[in-house]
Image 1 (spheres, helix red, strand yellow):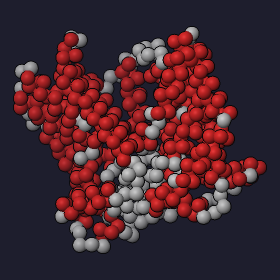
Image 2 (cartoon, helix red, strand yellow; image 1 turned 180 degrees about the vertical axis):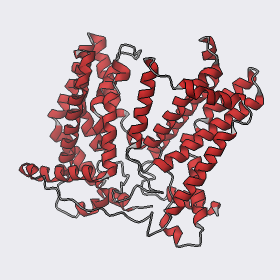
Image 3 (cartoon, helix red, strand yellow; image 1 turned 60 degrees about the vertical axis):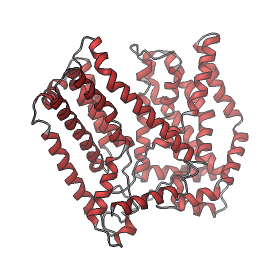
Length: 487
């Protein structure tokens, strides 16, 4: 039976309307997976000897900070890991047991990159421990215990995925714990370290995480199986509609009509609200680069400036026009000019960038130079990256079902790795411009070059929009075909 499911999954993958159009992106994703695997492998082999050179006990140090490792793993899963799904509805009318469908779906989660990548760290590290004379049985049982925690996070991601506010809660908890430890107010590792140390030195202790992961599997299985009904967990949830006129936007004509639709879309859908909420996280990205303890190259400051001001652009903007995929076909039957549609999206991105720049004014604490870097990045985002985002939307044919309830078996990630990968080219040019200006005279000239590129992009906006409009028209029917596909 599982072989049949695997066959169906492969057919679904290769026959997808977006398979060929996203093939290059899938190849790029493959290289990215390989990169992270090599990074984890290098850390797994080298961390023992690096910690030795720092006069630290490798095993003690790793055990001390595993609490942060697994908390960050859970946060990244909640942020990025999409739950592998099957086309459930047709299977429920066929002679397949519901338990078989659920077991197969849970088995797919076990093969996720977010689970496999940890093996590239823990396996080499355990091999080094054994090579260096540590007890073999203790090392293997410790490995089993840690990987049980990895899979526990995998099942927690499924159980917590429909809790909208938990991501922010976990991030807040980690930030508070790390801050308290940094300022020596409270050290959580004093309480977590004995547990992880016991997993190595106490032979039976590995049974605790194993029992936990077995219990979570059983819980997750019942949770998914309980929603596996056409008239229950898989049915569309209807909420009471609320009327909002937003009449103040009528003065902007057609542009105002589109903006009203976008504002209502953001306010009325959990997925879009979650995505917009995630853009707020980008405001704090600059703290990694602008503080006095940062050892980042100076050229990376403009990288931070673009991300701080471009959170809304990189999260919400990357999904244009996918946000409208559920009614895109209807829109294309109306007398709606593409240029007006794209113009409304552009102004929405501009407003989001402007608000982010204003909110980022707390960076004035680090000096005017830092805030000017953010302002220059905002100008570049408005003049250049906003156009690149809209251009990329013509080729990113990933539908978003806003009517899908955030229950079991739903693909509900408002934040997608594929869309973030498309932002990489948008970051290369400003880095080059900033480096060039800094090399010729000073960083101020570098900021001037970045801002000038944004101003030029704004000046030639009409010409750029005409080019983008032609591409959207050319891709129109391919986009409609991709949005029609539900499987």
